[in-house]
Every structure is written in C-alpha cells, then in structure tokens.
Image (cartoon, rainbow, N blue to C red; front, side, top):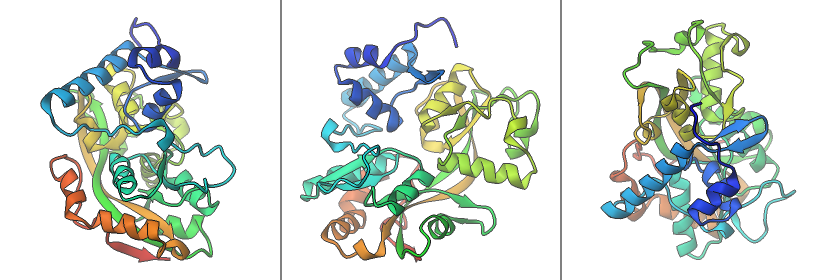
Length: 317
C-alpha cells in the first residue's frame, strides 16, 4: 500500500452521500475497491476517487454505466434464516443480474439481489434461501461448467440450468506485464505474489482446479491466502502494485488503470432454478426478459459479454 489515508465505511458513506449499508452493497457488487486490515474493511482514497470519476464520466457521456444502482430495499441479507417471502431473490454478482432485477421490477416482480459467489449461491438455493442461483464453476474432470456442481450441491433435487452469457476469464497483470506472466504454470514461480478471490467464487474454483492439474498447492504460492470479494477489488490490487497477478473476468480489466489482461478460458455463466419453481409467474417473466431483444440490446454495446445463448436451457438435472 502507499501512504494514502485508509478510509472506513463511514468515511466513504459520508463522501458518497449514501448509507453505510449502501457502501457495503457497492462492495458486494464489485463497484468500489477495498482491502482488509485484519477483519476490518478499509478503502484507499484512490479507489473512492476512481468510483466517483467513473460515475461522473458515465453521466457526462450519457452512456450506460458499468454498474446499475439499486435502491437499498432491493438488497437481500442472506444472514436471514430463510428466503424472504416478500421477494424473488436472485443470487450472484454480475452487472447483468442488476439490470435483470430492474427489468423484473418494471414487470411487477419484487426482485431482490444477494451478492455472493457461485458455490455459496448454489448452497443458498439448496437451502431455499434464494429463488435463483447463478454460477460459473468449472469442473476439470468433465471440462464442463456448472452442471456437475448443481448435481453435487443439490443432490436429488431437479433443477433447470439456463444460460445468461459467456465471458472470458484470465489473469490480471501489471501494465506491460513486467514479470512475463502468461499461464497457470506461472503461479509456481517463487517471484510471483498473487491476490485471491474468496472460497466458492467461480474465479477461485477455476484457479484451484488448474493448480490441482499442475500438482501445485496453494500453500506454496505467495499471497494465496489474501482474499478479496470481487473481480474489481483484485484487479485494483494488481493495478496498485499490491500483487503481481489475480484471476478474473476480462470486462473488469477494462475498468482498472495500470492493468493488462491475459485471456485463458471462455466460461459459461448460467442461472439455476429448481424445477418445481420453473413454471411460476416470476420465473416465466425472467425467461421472457432474458429472451427479449430489448434486454439483449442492453449488452450489445458493453464489451465482455457473449449473449448468443442468453435465456436458453442448457441442461436439466
């Protein structure tokens, strides 16, 4: 870290004129960078300035922002014991889901958002705490995305897997790639420091599966135990020089200064619904929106999304 003053969530809330819980929502959606000191969340001045500048630029250009602000009452706290009976809870972290939630509300569906990683998203669906899970988990044994994990994590439960988009996963490295990082094998070098995603995130699973194939252990990699909660946060850490490499999606690399992207894997990002809920009015409305040209047009001007199968059923388990 440099000599910037560390800001608390209260400091950031005051600067952005939002509530403290609104700041945590920005963290969960990956809109603002942060880091941890022990168990406490702190923000760099530069991350707050970057967030403000991006907001100004989007407003000035009249273009679509990279993130879509939701009101505080549109977030769902998964610390509650069971799914909210008052809403249709969509679990996951991508921008697409925020826009989908807003479309659903315009169609009369009380859509709520929960921001957690892919593995925990499926666990929450299994426990009936969310209505829709989203996932991008790669299985090295089958070279398939998501379907094997749905079978493992929701045993005996019939589910429908529907495509949302395809994205490119790869490595965030410093501008110019001064250490010449090109592949998963480079994680075995002793001159490399990484920053990791949290356990259960799709990017973390992709890394761990490839490390397993290379017979590499996380404990032997410098920085493996340093975790952050979003693509933006780990990319920002690389851009600041706090780490040499991180795993994440291509789209985020375009938002962060001093970062280059090394593409490694085309991933499939899917949503998962229990079969018994597939014919409910809420799910039918969601599928109509995903398959509509109006919704698809929202993403044709945003790089990083391949929407050719959006709304198509991929598998039933």
